[in-house]
Image (cartoon, rainbow, N blue to C red; front, top):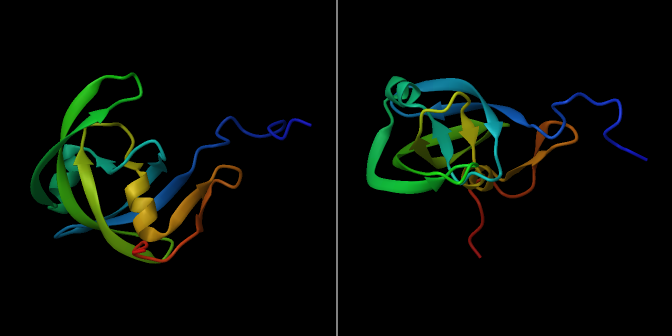
Length: 128
């Protein structure tokens, strides 16, 4: 049986309404990308939120295998009633992305069948 029959073409994509806080805050609709490490926001959004920059830049590998440098910023994220500190990478992308580090910090995972996030761990992550 094909479980994908009669489903929309967006099955597998999970979007989340996430609040990102710097000196200012904004609710953002972002695509959950478990292949990404960081939250990815464009430079305009980072300026609007007045995020605090770190002294660090990282090299990110894009889906097409190109590598780009991105500055990291510190912020707080809130989704599904859970809060935690995150790192945001600055990259001009048309869609904001939420990567695995933020999901782990919030104790959430995407369910591609329902298109929603599920609680899987403690808020704030593990220390084992």
